[in-house]
Structure formats: C-alpha cells, structure tokens
Image 1 (cartoon, rainbow, N blue to C red):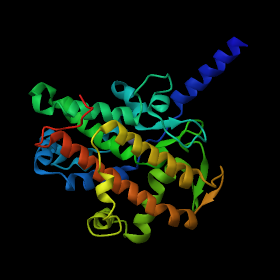
Image 2: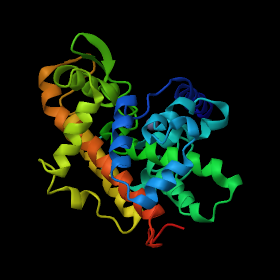
Image 3: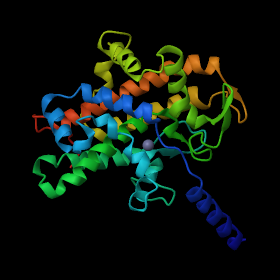
Amino acid sequence: MVVLWRLSSLLVALALVLVPRTHGWSKEGHVLTCRIAQGLLEPEAASAVENLLPDYANGDLSSLCVWPDQIRHWYRYRWTSPLHFIDTPDDACSYEYSRDCHDTHGVKDMCVAGAIQNFTSQLEHYREGTSDRRYNMTEALLFLSHFMGDIHQPMHVGFTTDEGGNTIAVRWFRHKSNLHHVWDREIILTALADYYEKNLDSLQEDLVGNFTNGIWFDDVASWKECDNLLPCLNKYATESINIACKWGYKGVKSGQTLADEYFNSRMPIVMKRIAQGGVRLAMILNLVFGDSQQGFAAAT
Ligand SMILES: [Zn+2]
C-alpha cells in the first residue's frame, strides 16, 4: 500500500515535470503590460530601466518582457518555472500566502508572489550596484516585469488539479484550446482581430485612454495604492483567484465550445487586468528607483 502510494505520487511528480504548462499572458499581454508600465515611469525609474536593459533592447522594456517564458526550460533557469503562477486548493476560491505560495515540493516562496517580492528586493539594491552586479539586476528587472503580468492573469492563480485550467480542454470558436490558454492569449487575439485590425498599438492606446480619461480614470488611484508590498501582492493574487472562479471556471466544462458569449463578457476583464498589471508595475518601479529613498517598508 505504502509502496503503491509512493509509486503513484512519483508518477504524479513525474507527470508534473513532463507535462509542459503554459505560463502567463501571451507575448501580446506581456508586451502591453510592460509598454503601459514604461509609459508611466518617472524620470529616475525611466533612466534606471534604460540603464539596465541590454543595448539590443533599444530602451524598450516590452521587447524583453516575455524573456522569462522563453528561458524557463533551460537547465540554468529551470528553478524559475514554478515562479509564474500560484496553485490554490481546488474550489477554495481564495489565496493565502502561507498556504499557497510554494512549489510542488513544498518549498516556500516559490510562486509568482514570492518571486515578485524577491526580485523587487534585489532591485532595491540597485543604487549600490557595481558593474559586476549589473547582469543580475537586469534579470531581476525582467523577471519582476514579467511576473507582475502573470499575477494579474486570473488563471495564473487557479486550482491545483487542473493546473490553472491547463487541463480543461475547450474549443475557442472553431479551434482546439484549453481554458488557461483562452485567458493567456485567445481573448486578446480575438479582441485584436475583431476590434483593432490586429494592431497592438491601437489596443494599447485604448487601454491607456481608459485610465487617463476614460472608464477606469476614477479607479487608478486605488489600483496603485501600496505602502507595503506583500499585502499588495496578496490583494492582486486574491483578485485573480476571485476572477478565475467567477469568470474563468464558472460554467465551463471540459470539451465545451467557448465563443461570442464568453468572449464578450470576459474581454473587458482581461483588458482591465492587463492595464492594472502595467499601472502597478510602474508603481513598483517608481518606488524602487525613485528619488524618495523610501521604497517599500517591508522590503529589504
Ligand atoms: Zn509567465
């Protein structure tokens, strides 16, 4: 019995290692989040970011925001794989750092919220940085920028058994997909095709317009309210799992076709989460690199 249990848990562990999971907003989602953030940087943060980016990025943070997804299977970076998401107990529809922020081996802090804390703390040492620290600081910036996108993708704070919707096969209009991927990419691509002639710049313009003088204008101040990073990250992750339950999973069965009705009701949520991710990433970078020397109370 014990042997059997061990064998089955070994198989489960193996399956977890072997089955690739998709992680985070698609390229488009991360690019939007990072472009929005970079547009909101104050001068100190803007020059720090520019200084940390490699020359080939041409000062464009968004060109490297998807980098953490590209390297997560490389041997050197395999440890970063669990940092893209949080698995919460099935159907609990809640998030608790101490209960949920760990990898499949139970190693604490190995989740997207822990990663954001860690890389933010690293960046707070930026001013002391010497040239030999520069490379790490660059990685910290790219990881932070990417993970601030991921924590806002509702299905990245999803249920454990279905891997945030990855194992829930659905059809998106006429092609095969899965529930996680619908939120990572399908909704964004359909929106781009239906409303923006596949032009990411126009979509970005719309999102920025919505919070500079549009429907989210009154909410932006509360989006970026944050004195202490950990409670803020708890809030972002809680928002995500709540949306995952109320809008992601709700009414969706494996094998179902999701089309107009799902798209029309969920698209505004996806757009708001991308904008929130961008606004909040800018808030963190402005605090970390800003003149005030204040930083976050709890970050070390
Ligand atoms: Zn990711």
